[in-house]
Length: 295
Image 1 (cartoon, rainbow, N blue to C red):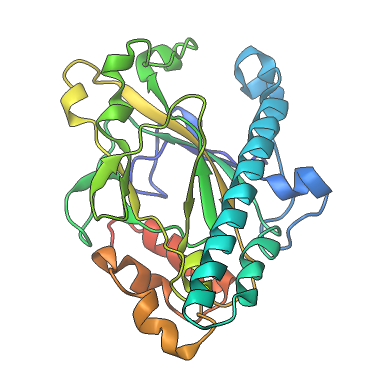
Image 2: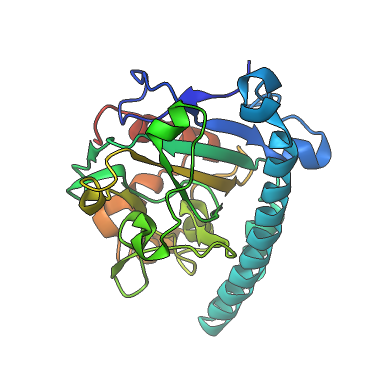
């Protein structure tokens, strides 16, 4: 009953990779014992299906999630303060920005995702091939820790190892998580092992009337490494912070639409600007990301 899926081949529903990944749990349930009505109750893999009997798997995962949650909350509070200052400078009230933090506590999915070594997917919206196409997350904010690149041959033999021993040859320096920064440049995130990266999602941009900005991102291919590391897959852990399911993807003022959609990379934010509830938007976004090809 655990929420696990095969490694992602880029064609959801047709994966047949033997390495299991795509594990989800709702961190909020572990923090408060409250079960989300939409997501349902957490279910962790049975220990006999995990390496070394699953020693500390749940505890380690939840402890990592707690730290990521603390950092995300600090970032959201700083973003709220910045948005309130900008709103006041523009002559509008900043009080409405507080819900970006206070309402983002109901659903906190913690997701462990594995990308197959030879997986690639065409992005017809922006162009090019990626492990994961360009998008903005539909939620309020997303936190990531440093990714691991796994040698699949070793992993399938039960001795999976991180392929980052040579830090100068770390694939994450050239590919992996790609970010579009405020200057419009595309750069590898290259998250250090002792850092947590937090980026804002579409809800934060819309709910702030465009004062805050979502971070377009993709997971790029490590083409240059395929000759020397043909079996490297990528393992990531992310924490996704959501507003309540019934919150709407609408700015506080009707006149904010143009500003919300300003500098819209690939039209990604326009897809999020639906006026629907967070739940309906999430379902639409999931359908888009899980289609055999980006539409």
